[in-house]
Image 1 (cartoon, rainbow, N blue to C red):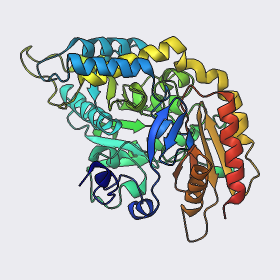
Image 2: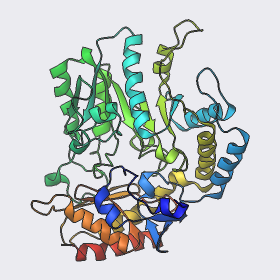
Image 3: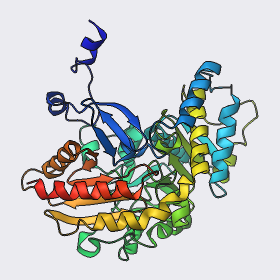
Image 4: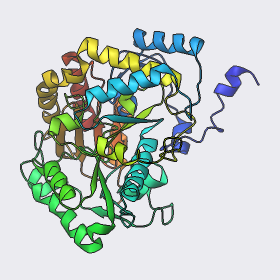
Length: 440
């Protein structure tokens, strides 16, 4: 077969999180990207309303990142991460640690958000064991939480579609309630005033299992993949207080909120709550090369450093941890963020974004609108007996109108690159206004 024949053969690729049969009947192919736009196979410019998959924070095709990756491939394509190192790994870790508030001073490299989550969960369990608290083995997540697709992540995650076909998963896992409450908080701009008491559900779960058996709680500061559930005011601080009270580690999953999405470098900064572990990925390299990083507090790191110096402190890692090309991409991405002020830029445009998003209130089928930073969600009333169909119609209509959005259930989710201009915001919401008036 020729190259063209192979590329036109759609059968072999089992696509992730995709309706494969529907897609292959009418494929949506992207062939190039630059700044805020994709180019489709039929030559259209598609405005990227989702930063790829929440990851292309610096925009597409950034020359500094491209140059850094190309240079690194030629210089050092791969270096083993076990008992060996290369300079860029240490440089990147130091730069990242300097971006986080103390005591989040240590970085463990992974290759994705899913790996970051499983890494953080394992570190939490191993930490308590190192401290002599081996009975602390239970992990807590939250309903409607998304923490990747590893067995650890789907166990602590709370989206039923990601869990229901995969058996018992990890044992000893429980979940606290989610924060979504349409009856009190529909069409809230930013953080809801109502709902801090939802955090007290953690006390109920602790009472059920006893704190002596619970190692960690993992939550997304903003639950994004489930449809942008913004935490009520004071909610995250209350979780921190309860975890401190019971010697439970608090893990923030910042795979989406990290690297400028809320108008601060991390959600840790935005909410002024410091967890014990933070998972990141996506925006770390602006999606150019797969990479993730877990931030750990000094107390966690130091708990492992009491073993003899010639012994491995943590039996965990990946072949591609701190891959040289990924490190080069991440360092260049951090340069772009710094030079262009992208990690705080959202704070300047968040109000314009919020106003544009909430201008859709009152359009057909819209039952809620939510936002924080440069994230937005439009929740639609489901078609009776056909959940998800209405939002998927909107997704298809938007693509036909040269706009890329994400859908989850009957929710349209938005998270464009941080380089977005007001004209792009206008285009997004003008397009969606037309789309929402067309769908059934």
